[in-house]
Length: 174
Length: 98
Image (cartoon, rainbow over all chains, first blue to last red; front, side, top):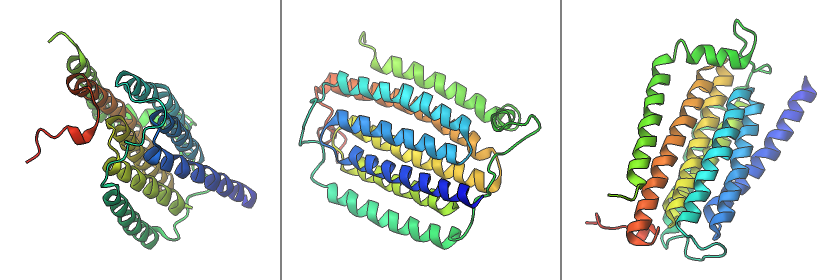
C-alpha cells in the first residue's frame, strides 16, 4: 500500500513537471508548430493524470478527442492561415508583462486558497467508483443516461449547432 | 494528495491565462484556452475522486464535448478573419476599439 502511494507520487510529479514545462513552451515558443506539438504533450499528461485519478474512460476520451481531433483541427488552422513555419519573433505582444503579472497574482491567490482549504485532505486509496455493474466506465455511463440525461441531450444539440455554425461561418459562397 | 492535483490545475490555468493575454497569433490564443479547459477538467476529476462521485467524470466529459464545439467555431472564425484581412494578428483586429 505504501509502495503504491510512493509510486503514484513519483509518477504524479514526473508527469506534472513534464506538463508544466510543455505548457510554458506552448505560451512562450516563437514557433507555432512547436507550440502545437508541446500542447500534445500537455494533453497526454492530462490523460495520464486522469488515469492516476482512476478515470480511465475520461482518459481515453481525452486522447481520442483532444490529441486525435482537436490537435488536427489546430494544425489545420495553423496551415490554412499560413503562419510562418519556423522561427517568428512576432508572436507575443508588447504587453506580455501584463499577462505575466496577472498569471503570477492568480497562481498566488489560488495556491494560497487551495493550501488553506484543502491543505491536508487525502484522496481515498481506492478511487474506483464501482456501481451495480462492477466497472467505473459502466457507472459513468449509467450516470450520464439517467441522472444527467437532459444535460447530455443539450450538449448533443449544442455540438450539432456549433458544427452547422462553423460550416456556415467558414464557407466561401456568400 | 488531493491538493497536488488541485495545485497542478491552478498552475496550468494560470499558464493558460498568461497565454491568452500575451499571445498575438489567434490560433495560439485558442491553444491557451484549451490549456485552461484542461486545467478545469483535472480539478473536476480530483474532486470527483475525493468525494467518490462520478459527477466529476460526467462533467469532465461534457467539458470535452463543449471544447470540441468551441474549437470548431473558433477556427472557422479565425479562417474568415484570415480571409478578410490576410492576417491572424490580434492587434490588427481592432475595428471595435473605442
